[in-house]
Image (tube, rainbow, N blue to C red; front, side, top):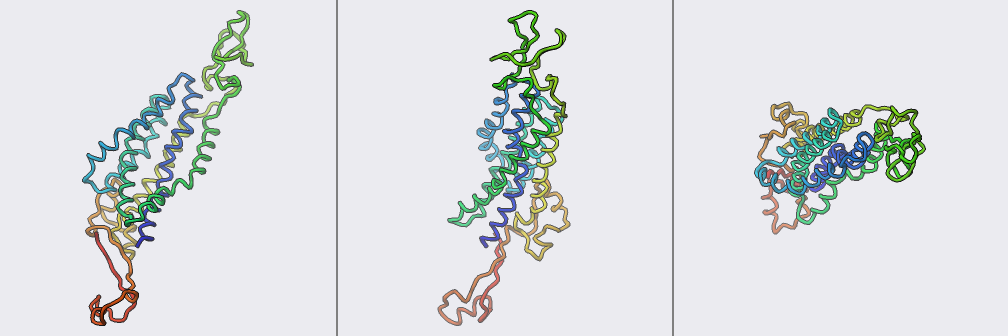
Amino acid sequence: LISSLLCTVLIFGFASFTIAMNWTAGEMILPPFLERRFGEEVPIYTIQSINLIGCLILPPIVGAMTSGREDFSIIMPGLWIMAISSVFVAMFPSAAGACVWQVFITVGEVLWSPRQLSWTASLAPNGSEGLFFAISSARQIMGPLADFMMGAINEKYNPNCPDCRDEYGHFCGNLSTENENSLQCVSVQESCDLFLDNMQQSCPQTCVQCPSWEYTDPSTCWYLLLLVSLVTPISVWFFLPFLRGKYNRDESFYGLFSLTKNRFLGVCGALDDHGNGRRVHTYWDVASESMDSQAGKEDIGGRGDDSSLEITLDY
């Protein structure tokens, strides 16, 4: 019984890996994306704080508003909202687009993430809550893979421009005022080894303005994140009948291949009216139980001397 429930939690834990890459992207891709393309004046950390502030304020409100709803009827919409959130910064690659992305990440997260925890707690037997919560975070095992992927995306689609920066990383965005005839660019801290050809040119304040920088489409990395994120809601929807636990293995293999209307509407979290609750399929070793009499042994399912009793529970 416990192994079956652990398997259920483990599937969701690994399925949520790709959508969790939005959090990684917010830490590893968003800051260099904004700074390299729009300059040092962009309020990067203020934009990042949208998610942090939202996750502090909204969970109690959302929890109170959705307390009577079935877990996956809230989880599925939340997964879809968070998965498609990067489309806004892909379509509008700017600081404003990044703000909208953070807003939609937050809305999706406060819908599905707390509900995943409550769902996990509802499955855990007494005394095994810690084990179940650890298993539900199985995606963290692949954290180094996410970091590697984000680094590769940054290098490929959001490269740096060291030729237009000083040794401290600041852009050489100002023209030197020490010599009127000098066309040397300087940063806020020191002079740079960057000279303009004429007065019609300007010192670069972003990587986009750097003469040696190779242009890349600012939307590409965000569309890649969108495609990767969509794997999570699709995977959860595929395993949804098994995660809800209302089918046996003999019923279209835990309901995964059932062709009902609610099965397809489950992509948005529609309830499945199959059965009355979670169905647990397990075995009880009757022979190992001490019986007061042979008559008492025969009363249990009429199994006589059989060594095990098959039990199906709905709750």
